Image (tube, rainbow, N blue to C red; front, side):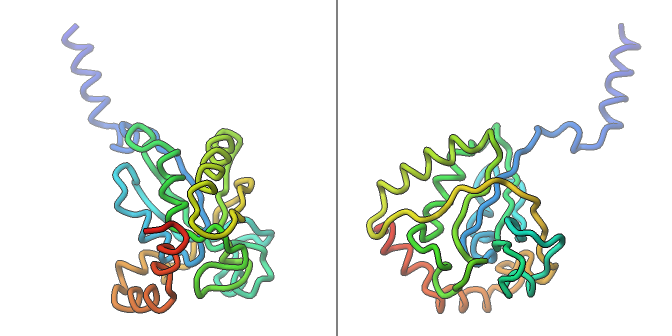
Amino acid sequence: MLRRLLLLIALAAALPAAALAAPTKTAVFAGGCFWCMENDMRGIPGVVKVESGYTGGHVKNPTYRDVTSERSGHYEAVRVTYDPQKLPYAFLLQRYWKLVDPTDDEGQFCDRGPSYRPAVFVDAEQRPAAERSRAEAAKRLKTGVMKAQILPLQTFWPAEAYHRDYAKNNSVEYHIYRTGCGRDRRLAQVWGR
């Protein structure tokens, strides 16, 4: 019995920490500038990682230039990795709606064009919760009509390194951009903050 217990302890010690960690899930959101989405989703208890990138288009391994040229069909998006034991998907959806202007399907804030439209990308399991959340958010809008879409999850392509952790690595430039873009002022109008 003691020998078996010692063997189990030795095996557990040899496993990487990731193997012992709780399984994570991912959620993908587009909401205009991925720098802002990345920054706003970070710090939520239960969020493990937030990555800026591209999804929803037809070009493999797109670049920022491909996406902003509107030739790739991709959206700027974030992939949120979270611990579902600590953070339900429904909470991430509620948080997402407050971070975007879902009444604007031509871009977000000062960023205009198809790559900046708001959308939630879902798999079959996530779709019912996303649809319910979208309907509930539409009722809470203070201005406009819900236009953000729920779209099928596609390959998520991480953004170039200089886009990752932008707010953290370039805090002054980020705050100038965010303020100048009018993001927070518009969110207050849309949601009544």
